Length: 224
Image (tube, rainbow, N blue to C red; front, side, top):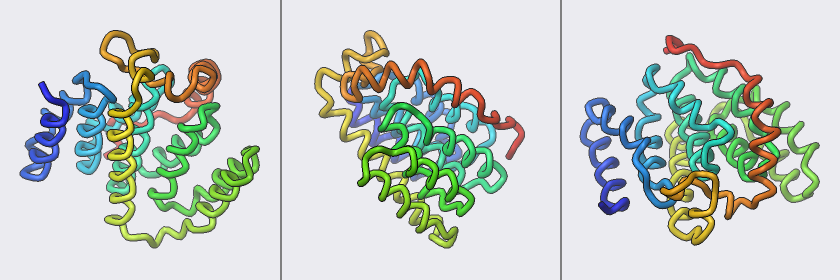
């Protein structure tokens, strides 16, 4: 019954044999846990397989209306998938670029971090455009720096480590969200963290970001 033990078990199963552990990892994406720690761990261990059967599953987890904490983890997991799968990388990059236009600041941050780790120089225009939209000079400068550093030459293992660290940070944050995790949009299992993200961000993200996200091309199930 301990999410910490479940998370450790999922990581251990993936270490032993990630492919054989896949059915359990898929199932664990739906297990309720405080801070969504179990689902986040399942996604981060599932994504490196880059199995075509899982692309839509990870993609949909980034959709508006899902718990914000989980969405940000799914963004990182989707980028992990993209690092591993050249066939799906362009679609994933395009989707993440669309999330840079989210009205939710934390979603924009997650998308920018994922694009940096994805390492595709084709994302430079989108990152620079996002920098131009930012009213905070520090955040704008950070986006411009990320665009400048996109060379496509960063080793894949380093990019994967950065994304896995992002998911781990979300897991740790979930354990300290306090009341925010229980008062979001997710109901009895505490599947929302808009209390932490702010009601304003959550409402805007649900109302406005949906149209932008929905306009992005959907991946083909047979893309891999």
